[in-house]
Length: 103
Image (cartoon, rainbow, N blue to C red; front, side, top):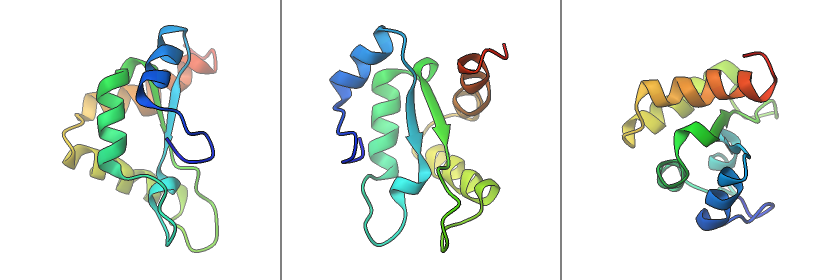
């Protein structure tokens, strides 16, 4: 969704059908040059399906939150958009482990 990638929701859905995971990174929602919003992410996650999504911070830059703090803020913002804790766990723990061959 970020301008650097520019995938539309239908493109994300097709990529997911082809077996890809779609990554949503919190850093894109921060700073003076916000690229995407949490509601945009929630809409896309619902359309693609949490089984095909991964949540990440992509943090570490000066001025941004530390990774754990950023992830906590990201997850809370998604919960406020109606994404359940079980879905967040799937996208932040289970799916990354599968992608890395750990499960």
